Length: 467
Image (cartoon, rainbow, N blue to C red; front, side, top):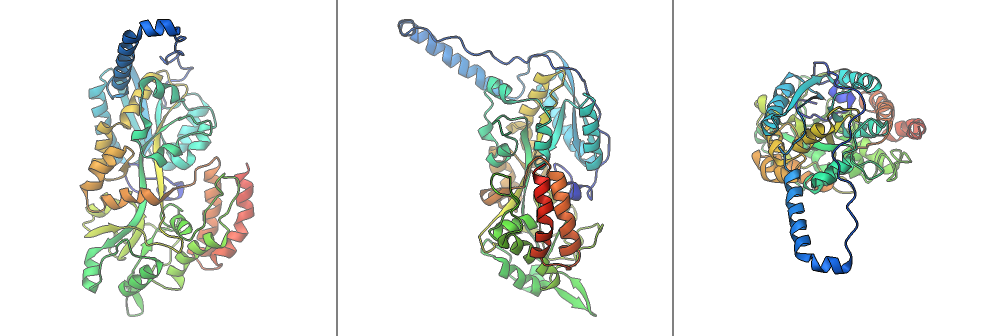
């Protein structure tokens, strides 16, 4: 993955960039936040009748105050210094600093120190800091890993603060909010941004071949047909591939294929592994066939780096919205179309990242103000302008991001048929075991069919799921 919010599977983001160390911030039990106490008992019917105008005026004033409190820049607490930690690279750090500077203008009594680290360093440092009670006040959280951290009782419950300020979570993308909703119905984080998967295509290569551009009528058969026509060979070597995708993480494409084939990875209650079903296996088999049967995609190489679409070696690429700045910088004449439909219809993956607060922060109200502002329209508009991820705010997503570049609407519209990347306790161990099997036996080599490989690994996955 690439810069700003890049989504976040360890296997993928490790191959990306990133570098500084997450700094620790205040430990100790948090002071009581200014959450309102339960309302006083209602007056008697007679009293209520005589006091109706006053009660009405009071309700209106209360509603006005709630609306005001929900806005960014309403912090009235003592001066606070908080740390915001995230994964990213130096470009991301610079981008985030601009957003933090904008936050500081709205809340001058809150000082925010931004720190960034590569994916592996970030999580290792975070676990050490949490264990020592010295974690950052606010930190970035990957959707699939959220349950692991939420169940440790180390995240600040934002639900009372959301209620206190009348913050409307309905302004955020529903699937993204769902990803940060705990089993108890409480929110211990809010989505910052998200990414969907679509089909990038090189318009110059299509024009040279005299082929129409991809559109929403495409299905798997059409993808194979056009990719075959766009694959070129010379002297027995392939000089241009019709198609390419990253195979090392479910998010990039293969989970979408599973859903498009009518399968799934887990049962709806997340208690059973169902990726060994014939339908799920058919989706992964389609990707293996693109490599070894149809020969329109290069064979993946273990530990390989680089992007064949970015390097001008492939005409089409199934991947995420985070790549838009990369391809723009590379000068590729590209556009974006929906993923081709499978036997069960259209589907894509969506993976939100969010912001959470340390339960032990010395400044819970300041941490909440930062999270609240980050998900509000003002700072979300800054996220949209980077085009490196999709803003989680619905209004900004529709009004700004979707209209800011040719493929923006395609990525935004994909939310209508998107499936959340699986999110559950133990996801990291589960996904690593599954991906290792697929890499070694299905994608990097065709030792086994997708069904045979999934049959082999599913019992082990089921044990991991039950831990």
